[in-house]
Amino acid sequence: MSFLLACPNCGPRDVNEFHCQGEVTIRPKASPSRRELSEYLYFRRNVAGVQREWWYHRMGCEAWFLAERDTRTNEVLSTELPE
Amino acid sequence: MKDIFRVRRMWRPRSELKPRYDVVIVGGGTHGLATAYYLAKNHGITNVAVLEKSYIGSGAAGRNTTIIRANYRTPEGAEFYKKSVELYEELGADLDFNLLFSQQGHLTLAHSDRGIITATERAEVNQLLGIDSRVIGRDEIRELCPEMDLSDDVTWPVMAALYHPRGGIIRHDAVVWGYARGVDRRGIEIHPYTEVTGIDRENGRVTGVQTNRGPISCGTVISATAGWSTLVCDLADVPLPITTHILQAFVTEPMKPFLDVIIVSSQMHVYISQTDRGEFLIGAEIEPYTTYRGTSTFPFLEFAARHTLELFPQLERVKVLRQWTGLCDVSPDYSPILGKTEVEGFHVSAGWGTYGFKAAPIVGTTLAELVATGDTPALIQPFELERFYTDTLVSEVAAAAVSH
Image 1 (tube, each protein chain N blue to C red):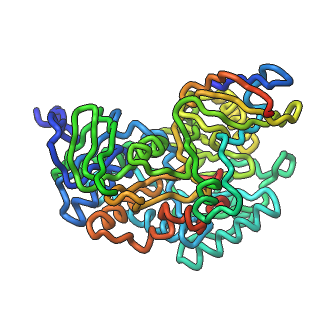
Image 2: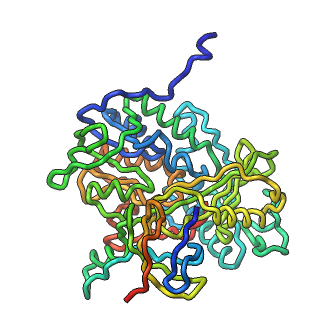
Image 3: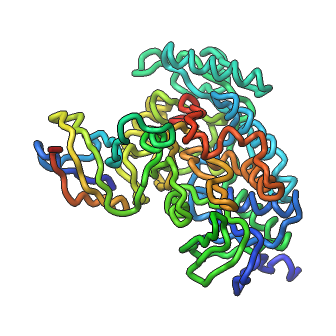
């Protein structure tokens, strides 16, 4: 089954209204080495568990927000606008 | 007479794990079993265990849409899959098992100028490598598939197609069983319901694995675990550039055969074939969010059915028989990750996204060669994990992101 995601502006909506940008990654330091930059660009933790990730409400308020979701169950634990 | 009714096992149940194997293969799907098979057949390495956390062929091996083809976009990819198709053509005889391989032809539809350009690019690359693949117009499409709606009065009229005559479908379970039987006959042990819980290392080298049935010592570990690759590679502290997504498919009730080519539309995110049983087998693209939850979704069924009806409106009243889901390990460039990692003796077959099944024989032969000789075969050098650190990606998005 699909699941619902609570947009911080619009409330609970169908997941198909949103674009998922994937897990939150840590930006590398200024002038990173090629390896550090590659790690940032391509490598992902891809956890089976609670993951903090970016979502975009493309068919709604067009806001970017953060969600905590359990990738094993698709249960969305919380959503919030970025600071 | 009595012999006819004797229950024949395809492979033997094994009671105990041995304390040591030369090679441990994690994952009892097509890739793991093929690697074991060619280790024994081509290199005489038989002190091998295939460990599977569930039943044999329970993952992507039993959930794919069984399409075999070689018409990829990059020279690296096309050459690799060409070898795989050639091995599949010989596989039934090699395994002495009927795999019901039907090379009925594969059509990738183009619905736009951009689509025709992509198809032409693929045809050019394919032809240079000796792969039978060409762009055909609507007349020829109509001859190959008269049942498809080729009118202009639709959302996405068919303008041309990339035609790959040697593309086909095969019985995927038979591939698993045939390999498993071949592996077992050559003395390699298959251990279902054996989950790897740790990978032991010393000085950057693999020394063994921990399982839910006890420890094993070994010199080489191969992970062939598709959607679970990240979790297995985490055990060896090998980071991967992949995310896990679900891919879904469904079949309709069986019907009189009327479609004997495979139809793919990247534009409409759908691929369609009719199985030997008469069922229409329909798949689409991965869900855009990462997840390990293998539950089917209703929106997928809705979208895939709608797009199928654009091409085959006569299926309007046909009932859906069943729908299922598998986990896919998607890499950033839609090419696989094959071979060595930074841990010595730990090799991977990962990043297979939605196209792993069609590569099983060539993965098996090349990984077996890597284990036996210690050198990465030239055919899979472009697919090393290292490419993500050196930024030398092999972008197969044009031919693998949606189409099958």
